[in-house]
Image 1 (cartoon, rainbow, N blue to C red):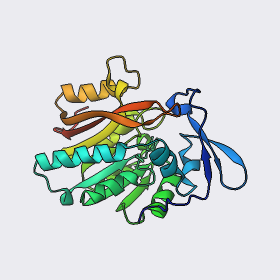
Image 2 (cartoon, rainbow, N blue to C red):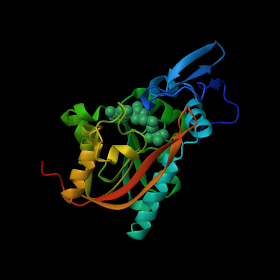
Image 3 (cartoon, protein in one colour):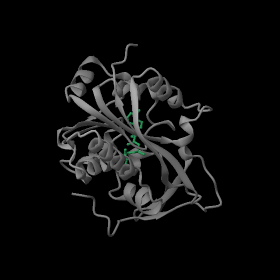
Image 4 (cartoon, helix red, strand yellow):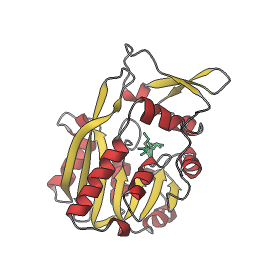
Length: 253
Ligand SMILES: C[S@@+](CC[C@H](N)C(=O)[O-])C[C@H]1O[C@@H](n2cnc3c(N)ncnc32)[C@H](O)[C@@H]1O
């Protein structure tokens, strides 16, 4: 069941479009009935506690379409590779309140397990989309102990999704690597990244990681598209790249 979006119990306002901010310092102001309060876009713990705010801000007002774009690309590649989505077990990293899992389940993906670093995300996913995730782990992938690692890996994943969550102080390359290593050989990997993160001048670390995975044959790219991820608060478009690939061999270190 999707979150009720018709009459949000809050008012939301954005900065003037003439003010420009980098993505990790963009903000909005919200009034839940007690006056206006500032929320940075990356204050996910606070955003998720207000039902419907995340969807209103990113999906309705700023027109985010990343989950649908990457899930369509994945579904297209599954069909081209003649893989039945119903048998797929997906690890969704940076899962938030479950929008990606909802999109995956709408495309008949059999099982989705979520991972996020903050407990508020799991609480919001259970509140907004109960039953969508088969399981949901609140962990820091870069600091897993043996039990946590074994517990997540027991999901037996043959696909990884990571949408709108790489870079910008969110999921670092090392965490992506840990999640990637939990996916079986021949598994599918679907992710989105700001387009310039994959350029030669990239300093996020993702350009180098993805390039080395492709060059070594660890990863085979199946499909990729550049698209408008969402609007910035300036109302200018932010372009991302969605990539769907297949893991072709285990990491050898
Ligand atoms: C922009 S939200 C995207 C949520 C969801 N994938 C979507 O498309 O709606 C980014 C999410 O990544 C999570 N995140 C940030 N750093 C993380 C990390 N190191 N490990 C796991 N999740 C992280 C945040 O808590 C947040 O829920």
